[in-house]
Amino acid sequence: MPKRTKAIAPWGVAVVLLSWLASPCMAREPRSAEEYFRRGLARYAAGDLDGAIEDFTNAIVVNSNIDAGALKQLKSINSSYDKDGRFDPCDKVAVIDEFNAQAYYNRGNVRLDKGDLSGAIRDFDKAVALNPQNVLAWNNRGVVRQKTGDIDGALSDFNRTIQLAPRSSRAYNNRGTLRIEMKDFDGAIADYTRAIGIDPQNAAAFNNRGNAYDAQGELDKARGDFDRAIELNANMLDAYMNRGLTLIRQGKDAEAEKDFAHYLRYASDMKDTLDKLVREARDSRQLSVVH
Image 1 (spheres, rainbow, N blue to C red):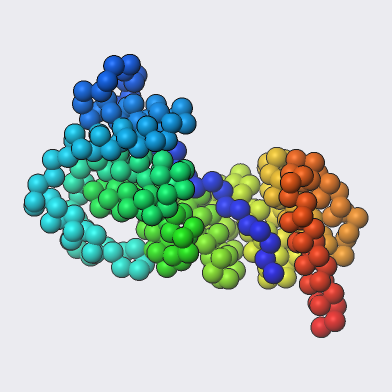
Image 2 (cartoon, rainbow, N blue to C red):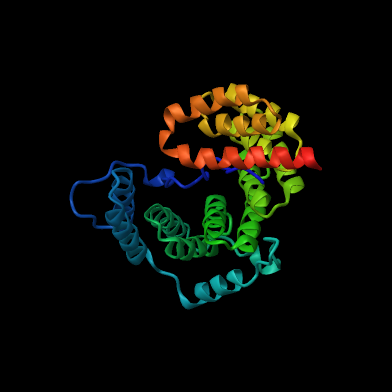
């Protein structure tokens, strides 16, 4: 049974400030879409999620100037994606409204932080419709779809993210984590290996690939990846827990206890969960001996 797997934090979840909107947030009540946008960013950074949503909404309302022809184009773009994230010729339509695309994207991130997954998806839908090149919106919609159990939709979005950003280590890492959930361990290992090839310092990809190797019973490879993850990021607690569980499966209980002790030093609230995982690891070791 695969262990708990944590992907690297989805890239792009933080709002992105357009360079041409980079002036300081004004204290007075906003008078333009740009000022609402700037204050929305400031409120989000301050943790005022409801205020940020209100400001991004006002920015969209003030800026909205999409005519009927643009809406027709938007509809054709939305209907043109297939399950693999590919585009048909009508997708040569470029950005309809970059400002609103960014505002929807940022509002989607705030809604994601609030746990409003359906609202986040709706905003990311609009962001990619208005700007099909918005890599972060594709990626983050994939993250939310995965959270909601829409595996096919998430895979399509991660595929499109990789098409737009083929040198993104994190994009391959995200898709690999989805593939672990799909029990496609070979596919996950291929994605994590690609992520590591692009960025050999990607500790999360080593940790996640270790989980995939462990799930396939390749315990030596799993141990090696967890070792490397910890070398790169000594604060990655999951890597200690995961390495400990692999050591249990290898019959190296004393070594495993050192990893568990380190893990629980900083995550004492996870003791019951860890105890359950250790029992499962010992059971799987016994079953492998019987067979």
